[in-house]
Image (cartoon, rainbow, N blue to C red; front, top):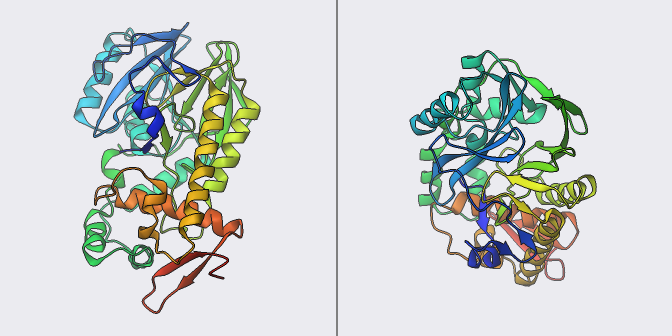
Amino acid sequence: MRDGFEDDEATAAEGARKVGRLSYPFEVAPEVGSGEAVEVAPGVLWLRMPLGGSLQFINVWALRDGEGWAVVDTGLQTRETSQAWRTAFAGVLGGRPLTRVIVTHLHPDHVGLAGWMTRKFDCRLWMTRLEYFQCRMLVADTGREAPEDGVRFFRAAGWDEDAIENYKARFGGFGKAIYALPDSYRRLSDGEAFQIDGRTWRVVTGQGHSPDHACLWCPELNLLISGDQVLPRISSNVSVFPTEPDADPLSDWLRSLAKVKAAVPDEVIVLPAHNDPFEGLHTRIDGLIAGHERGLARLEKKLAEPKRVVDTFGALFARPIGPDLLGMATGEALAHLNCLVGRGRIGRKIDEAGVAWYAANSSGD
């Protein structure tokens, strides 16, 4: 359940307390999967739930809410994560009930246990409309055979038959790490403000990584729960998927980053879903935008001669792309390609085999 590829400079500095102009105010982090917590502000607890793989954990947050707790993000539906939450309910959360479960976006590491928690405590799921309904749509694909549209999509990207067969075998697994969603929810909307324990939290949404990702900003506590919208050491995956092959999520993503920068002051402490809480929001946003613009420039230069999607990975990713990363790399490469198409920088031609070839406009359309 990876959310992105590590940034080269930040990866080299992993473990340091400062990376560039970012600073990391907390010397101690909660142990992954222990159910223990670190208080990051009055009434705001930081817990870590296990993921496995290279990301290893997701940060989740418990906010004191009167006689109970509001939880932001949940972790995957796994036995290990459920047990960690049970430990937390009985321990650091003091046996108090959950009042609401707030989910930043639809990815299984964020929403996986929301249905379990809302049923256990008879409380409401809070989520943006697009995230809730798209999550239900994707969960409905669980166990279904891979659609022909998907096969055509990946063939057009240049996948070989082995990769196509792997896609067919793995399709329909999205919902396996998600407990059944509740049949109703409370909609979060961009710009709205609501109270948790007498403090105002404001919703700032973003697009590109997911349909309508919700960040939560509390001016009084000087905190931004950023989910995957702004991460300190990795760049969130921004991908095109077979359901919307001509989408331009990277342009959405870049606009959303600029929107967050304009809406939220630089002085906040950012509570991200992965890595550590940090200070330096605007610096990080500027770095993320600049990194994608550099990637777009490298990609356009590579397209002096026509290339398939699978031929462009070297312009965007420092690591080799094997079968385990092929789907994510394809989606992210297409996001950059579609962005360049939208900017009028490159063109696309489909050959007789249905494979798409991209080229800079000086040598293409």
